[in-house]
Length: 221
Ligand SMILES: [Zn+2]
Ligand SMILES: [Zn+2]
Image (cartoon, rainbow, N blue to C red; front, side, top):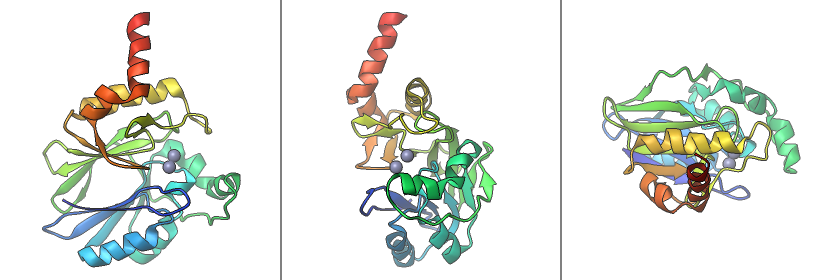
């Protein structure tokens, strides 16, 4: 699997190019302010972008969608429960003090069916909590268990997504992390929306927010 990550100021949000080394088909995940760097990576890798996949619709994850769509004409995918955030991109930007343009319309809402590029397959898992339409994109060779998880802002190395933004909910987030993400395999690599990569096993065993949540659960029940 070809994988490139880029991040720039002010949000240092990770944008990804994921490609098939055999067919040179690729996808973009969460193109934001670093979209020029992602497009340079696409040129260097000599891949064809087939789809633009969004883990969720917070402003830092969508500001590059317009440029990417313009460059590649590829369909934009989002979970429908984040449409209100996507449609409010300009207002979200204003909330953080940034002037941003409304991105182009969503082309496809995730419906549970896998998305293919080259020899690879993306399985989409709904992981609400940070926002209502957050998803985890699990990527691997078609038919195999995907070992790379693009989790957006649900889970970070040593931390968890904030739940104080519109549509956020702590209990829902923790259920997404412990119930959905943790079932995808201890060895799976986690590629968060901000900061460094980690693994499911590392977060299961060391993430202080996860450990605190699990401790509360076990005393209550
Ligand atoms: Zn977010
Ligand atoms: Zn973010």
